[in-house]
Image 1 (cartoon, rainbow, N blue to C red):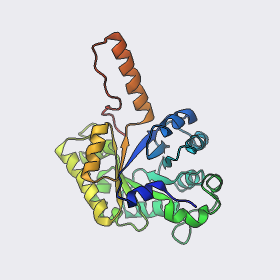
Image 2 (cartoon, rainbow, N blue to C red; image 1 turned 90 degrees about the vertical axis):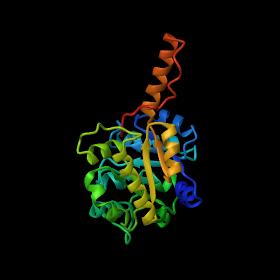
Image 3 (cartoon, rainbow, N blue to C red; image 1 turned 135 degrees about the vertical axis):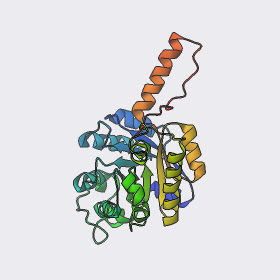
Image 4 (cartoon, rainbow, N blue to C red; image 1 turned 60 degrees about the horizontal axis):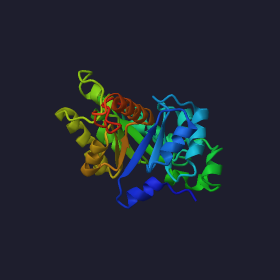
Length: 270
C-alpha cells in the first residue's frame, strides 16, 4: 500500500528535512539518501538532470526509505505526470502565480474524478505497488512554489485551492519579485521586506490548513524556519554541499589555521 512518509510525519506534527539533488548521478543520489534526510527532491528545473537519469536516481534511493520528490521543470502536464509515473511521491512546481495555475497543478497530480492525470504509472506500479492507482490521489503530494510578486498578490486564492497540499518558497526568485529586481537573488533572508513576505506566506498556508516549505542555505537558518512553523525545509543542494566541502578541505590544507566553513553556508539562491 502506498503511504507517503512525509504525510505521516506531518500528521504527527514533525517538521521534515529535505535534500536537493541537482547532480545527474544515481551514486550521488544514493549517498544523499544515506545521509538521513526525510526526503530528497530531484531538481528537473535548474538541476542538470534529464528524465532517464532521474529514473536511475529514484531507483538508487529505493532501498533507503527516504521519500523521493521532484521539482518539475515547469507547470507542464506531461513533465509532471511522467515523473509521478516514474515513482516520485510528490511534485514541487515552480512559478505558480494564481489560483488557475494552482488548479492546473492539482489536476495534473490527481487521477479522475479529482483531476486529469493520465493513467500509466509504469515504474510507480513496480516501485510503490500494484495498488498505486487506488491510493495515489490521497498520497501524492502537490506543492506550489510561491516566488513572484504576482503570486504574493494572489496568495490567499492560491493557498485555498482544493487539493493543494502545500506551498514552497523559492527565496531567490521571491527576492527578485518582491523587490522588483532591486535585491540580488539569495537565500537565508534577513531583510525586513523579505522576512515579512516569508512570514506572510507561512501564515497564509497555516490559515488554509496546508503545509509550508522553504529552501535554505544553512542548517542554522533551516532550524530557525522550523521554529517559525515551517513543516518542510530544504538545505542547499548536493552540488553546493560538495563544492563547499571540497573548498573547505583545500583551504585547510593550504592554511591549517583556516576554520571549517561548515558546508552549505552559501547565500546563492534557488
